[in-house]
Structures are given as C-alpha cells and as structure tokens.
Length: 110
Length: 244
Image 1: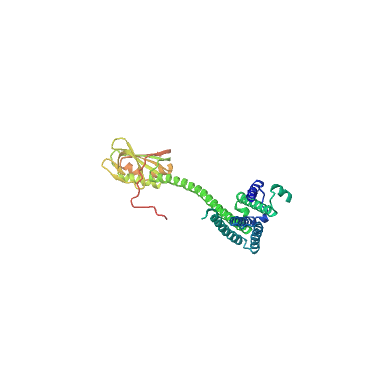
Image 2 (image 1 turned 45 degrees about the vertical axis):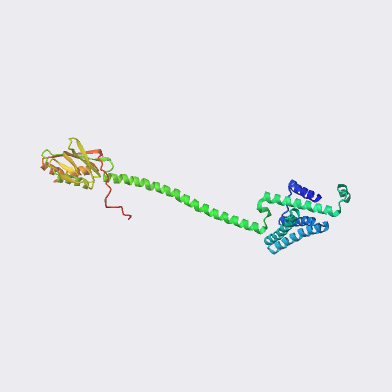
C-alpha cells in the first residue's frame, strides 16, 4: 500500500513542481525510468510469487537504473548512444512484458 | 528519520522506507519525463547527433526553399516584363492593322488630297481611261482611293479602289469591282494634293485624254478629304502567312 501511495505521490510531485531536467541528464532519464519500471514489475511479480524481498528489490532497482544509465553513457562515449539506448529499451521492454504476463497469470489464472 | 517513520508507520523498517523513496523517485521521474516529452516535443529529449542531423536537414531545406524563391522571383519578373512586351506588341499590332486596313480598304481614311471629277456627256470615257487616271494617281502617291459614280438607282455610289480592284466597260458606264457606275465620275484621293493634281495635268495625260472624248476634268485640291467607302476583307483561299 505504502509503495503505491509513494508512486502516486511522486507522479503528483513531478506534475506539480514541473522541474526542468538538466541537459546532462536528459538522455538518461527516460532509460532510468524504463529500468525502474522493469524493477517495479519484477517486484510485483515476486510479491505475487510470495518471494518478494525488500533488500533484493532495492538493490535490483538501484542497479537496474545505474546499469542502464551506464550502458547509455558508454554508448554515448562510443558514438553508438542512440542504438544502445534503443537496445536497452528493447531488452527492458521484453522483461516488462514477461513480468506483466506472469502477473496476469497470477491475477487471472490465464 | 527513524523516529519520524516510526510515528508515521510504527512497523516500518528502514528498507520499507527505501522502497517507498525509490518508488517516489520512479513516479517523479516518470512524470517529469512525460512532461518534458510533451512540452518540448522531440527536440528536448533528442541526442546531440540527432539534433545536428535535424539542423542539417533544416538548413538544407532552407537552402532549397531559398533557391526556389530565387527562381520563382526570376520567373515573376520575366513574366511581368514579358507582359509589358506583349502589350507593346499588341499596340504595334493594332497600329499595323490600321495601316494595313487603309491599304486593304477595310478602314476609312482621311487626310489631304484631291477630288477629280470627270464628266462624260457622250459616254465615251471607258474603263481604260479611268484606269489610266487611277494609275497616274497611284504613281503620284495616292494612298487611299475611292471612285464615285451614279449607281443603278440614280444615287451616288462609292467604291473603294484597292490593288485587286477591277475596272471593266459597260454600255452605259463602267463596272468597278462588280458595281456599275455611270458618269459623272469622281475620284476621292488621299495623298499629296499638289503632286496628285500635277499628275492629272500632265500633257497627253488624263485631262487631255478626257478632253479628247468631249469630257471634262476638274481637279480640286483639299486639305481634308475622306475616303469612306469600305471593302470587305476576303480571307485568302490558298495563301497562308509564311513564318519567314
């Protein structure tokens, strides 16, 4: 319950404060968001599998975001930033779909 | 921190707070990213090389559009000057039409000239005498000529005399371009009056010839004569304008 409230509160804060993203962070924010979404869906699935562990969630969340950002940063340095961020989004998207499918099976038994 | 979280949620552990903070950050980032994508469009989130490419494309397009503007401006100026030339050509064509109309007899002509009245009491003046008179007038620079005589109905009939005009004899008078005329005849001629009247008075010329036929020739100079008889323009049946 608390995490859901926190998520909604974050969305409301982001909409209300309307901050400008620093130019240096602009390429990484969308990737970080997608990576965090992946971690969140994984957490929901683990919760439904009754194997959820807060420590694992925190570590996977942070590492997901950091690794995704690092990969994109590396890509930028190598001149393939656009392609690498596309690749990261594709991989994370596939994971999100997999997790969403597992959640669906849990919730609807289908 | 620990105390505060304990007040809010007595059973909360530190890791729960961490989870909540992470999700708060996730929601925050999500909202900010969506907001910035919506407000700034694609450009704000685009990468530097993409921006450079977009800028390149834009400047290329600008160049192309500028070239198009230049060529269109040239076309416009060409067309406007062309329409001026077309107007001048039209004016010139109208002027030529008027001049050619005077020669072809489709336009009335006025100007200085002479009136040559030829009486023929004995019906002796033939078409050849009138033709001689016409040739003399032409040689003297007659620019527009009409021949008048008494028509079949008794009224004065005028026939415009042009290059193709024909004169033939008739028992009572002459036939000019199919129109029967009876004496007295009168040439109305536009041209230089003194030259024309001089041409009539040449010894052995028109006046003498008419006199020998018991007729009389009266030449009147005028500063203003009007050749008002018109001739229908007949389109040539075989001849076509040649491009050169």
